[in-house]
Image (cartoon, rainbow, N blue to C red; front, side, top):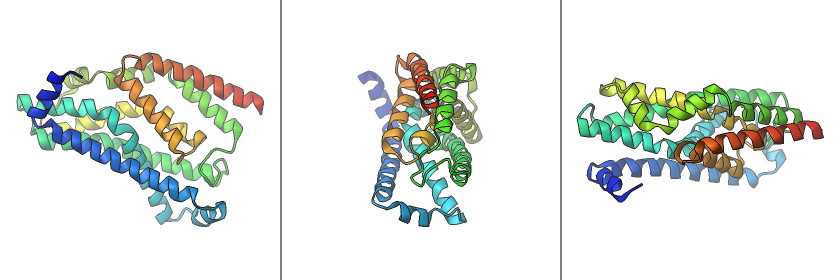
Amino acid sequence: MTSKVLSRWVSSGAMAVVLGLVTITVLSWLYLVGMAGDMASMSVTDIMSLRHWTPGYFTMMLAMWVIMMVAMMTPSAAPMVLLYRQVAHKNRLADGRWGTLLFTGGYLLVWAAFSLVATLLQWWLEEAAILSPMMVSQNHLFSGSVLVAAGIYQFSPLKQSCLRHCRGPLLFITRYWQPGPSGALAMGVRHGTYCVGCCAALMALLFVGGVMDLTVIAGIAVVVLLEKLFPVGEWMSKAVGVLAVILGVALIVAH
């Protein structure tokens, strides 16, 4: 990113947006680190005593998933949020401050809906004894199948189409611009939907490597970041797909 672009963002007040995105990302990661540390310090017996799917426990797991998605997805969404703010502010097409907030809120709302589905799926997998008390797959056939499915999805037309939208902020803004607060919210929801279409299969790998394994969480977050923001993104997407299929097949065959 050139100094000229950075200067324009700072002069237009975008630094406040940057600081806001950084703040919620850092706070989300701190929460995940703290929760992972608490789990690591507990025995399996202690964890089992807590893992009853009461309404309170379900709410806690849902909050965990939502915060995890915020931590993983906010960095890769930052360029789109900043571009929205810049276009809205420069052309006075919407209130830059509230429009940006609504755009970001719409984006995260979609990931919150995804988190609800993920929480329900985790509940079912635990009840079926596919996930261990530490939220890691203990079924090799399930793990291998998820890896193969996620790998194949990396090559699918839906994945590639969603990835192109996520990699092209300017094209997205130009094609889907809607004015006003409701337009900002709708655009955020649309962008979030494309991101879920791009990354949902990768998120399924959390059930294989560990829902609260920080290494797995960070690894998937890095892959998402590379796919969306770097020139090697499309190549990286396919390379990850090949690797996932190979690992999945090897896991299935070995057991």
